[in-house]
Length: 268
Image (cartoon, rainbow, N blue to C red; front, side):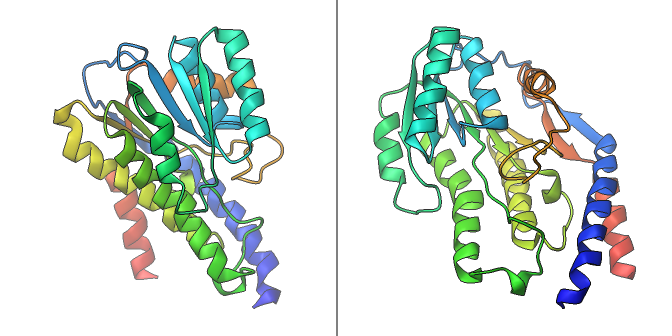
């Protein structure tokens, strides 16, 4: 099994690059009437995984639009740093809640921290993946990895959505969640859950003034992706965030592309 890993790893990256091209087939369908993202939705925005990369960029853009922000991540020192930066740069209030989303007993603390706040935007960004692509049965400490991946990538999205349950809801999936990605099996499957969960919520609540967006980024330098050299620089990343926020466009892969992929693999 180990002897096949280098070749499989190479094929994984080739395959991931190929799937990235399929994002050109993304179609867009609105989830409301050009929803204006800002304090009009609610005074506060809540962002999980908010001290780096995509999560931090969302927090900064929402603060720039005049929203106060609640930053939720694991390390208090990094939360304090980002909180100071946002307060100094955007002149808005920023609060922090330090929790480890790998644990299941954190949500009472989060609920207490959010009590009484008029929340208009929730960004479910926290996530985790493997250190390196691996066969499922070769993952070190597999039992613990399964539990952590489910708690961080799936349970966090469900529980945070339950706690906020109004306004605009962004759920960060990933490109690896649109199609099966061998050697990242658990991560790929959990990110698929996030995308389908978002689509289901969109269908259930779009008529009830709750707006849901599934975001499927590719090749951004984050701790989750384990990519050290970004393919989007800081300005490009912020530009991506800005382009997504104004209209709350709901992303989904064209079903014809997905159906073609599934039919092809069924034959094989």
